[in-house]
Image (cartoon, rainbow, N blue to C red; front, side):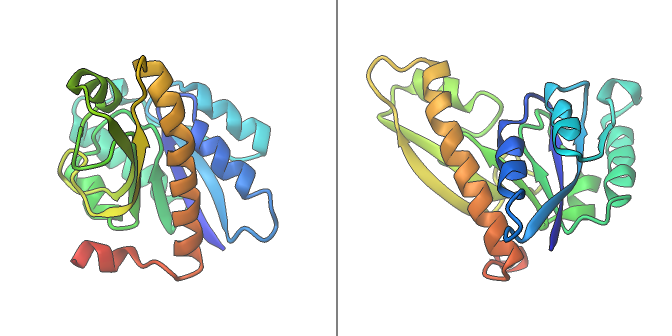
Length: 197
């Protein structure tokens, strides 16, 4: 059984999908803890699904590096074999990458390397492109530039707003994440191989 720690900043829609998938006794992975960098709405999923939660508030530390060190210490308590950044709206410091990568993955609402950064959906709309996508990557020290685990195109429809486009990207992100977790748990995907390539 693959043990996951999921880190969030918001409502945790990808996290919910993972938790619902893992209710199936045949699903070979379990979320062992949910963490956040603030009092995120998604922490309520811990109570709903009976999963421990923790918060490492970014504002409680004098520097990004100090916050990263505290985050490492907390995540390590759970002996996770995979750390999932699922809507964690903060770049993790290099020490976090060194501690967990390549077993550190992140969902992103664009077809990377197109539209990296925090405003990927807005940027796609502003660029007037006909398609964008969803990606799952191994986290490295770049901004959304790590090795690609999986990705899929999503069309941009006439009249799309940032909100409507994002709502169509989210289910694709969730599916890519769940499929990748399955592949990792079943030893069909080795993130170390991706990191080396």
